[in-house]
Image (cartoon, rainbow, N blue to C red; front, top):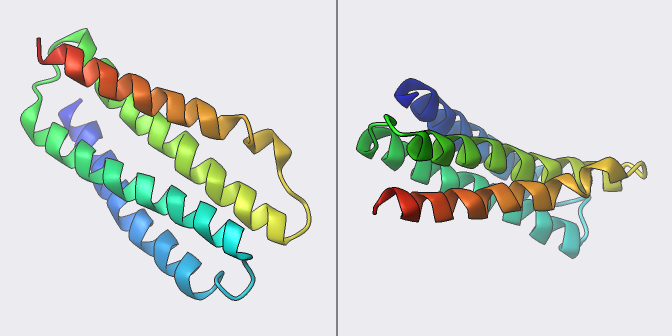
Length: 124
């Protein structure tokens, strides 16, 4: 589990930098201010949770079900939240907004909230 968490952390960190740079340079010219802000929110959450996963990868033993659930909620929640925002923003510019992604963003956010709550529980 520790290896999965650390690989997810490094993937989210590296891809967050790449996606952020792409959004700041290539997409800035075609995004409205609202789309730019949404895209940046996805990048911020991805990078914040990459750091969280990196720290957890070194600090948690992942022997309990709660600790394993924390990791999976952070990994899946980050993916669903950030990547659905990227898809929504990019598809909006192309005039073919992928509406099915709309409900995925709050699901990812919910998983992130659950991860934080479970993390708190794991400390008791």
